[in-house]
Structure formats: structure tokens, C-alpha cells
Amino acid sequence: MTIGKAIRIVRSIRGLSQKQLAERVNCDHSYISLLESGKREPSWATLNQISASLQITTARLVDIAAASEDALLGVD
Image 1 (cartoon, one colour):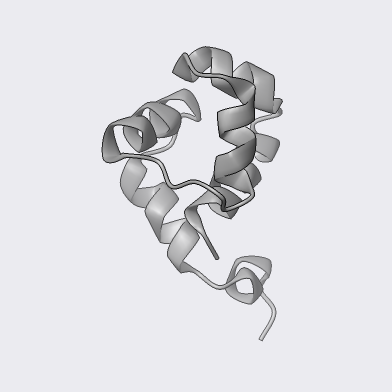
Image 2 (tube, helix red, strand yellow; image 1 turned 90 degrees about the vertical axis):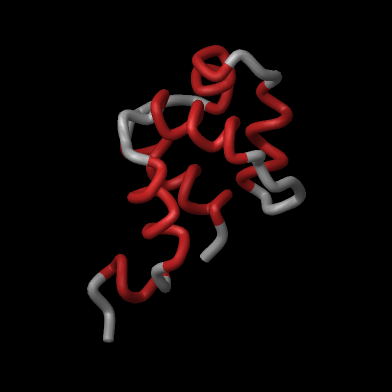
């Protein structure tokens, strides 16, 4: 999984739109879209802002990104 997919998953769980997350991070919503689609990679500073906005630690967000999708779904 990519960091973008992890952002999308947590954003969805938190019930935020891309626009709402972008407002919290102070960036354009198209940037969030690019991150989630894997077309851009965030800097560590931006990743920290996104994590804080999603109320999750950066380390946990990276852990989610490192996990396989099957592992997150409990599928063996």
C-alpha cells in the first residue's frame, strides 16, 4: 500500500472530504487528490501536518501504508 492510500483510508474513516483535509493542511484539494492517487509524495513536514489533521501519529500512518491491504482487512 502507498502513503496516499493510507491517507485516503484514514481520511474516509474520519469522515472528511479531500477539500476538508486540504483546508486543515492549508493546501489545495487537488494536492490531496494527487497524494491519494500516488502521483505525488508528501514531504515529511506535510505528512506531519496531514497526520495531525487526521488525528493520527505520523508513525501510525506510515505503519498503515507499510501494511498490506489484506492484513488491514484481516484476510489471510
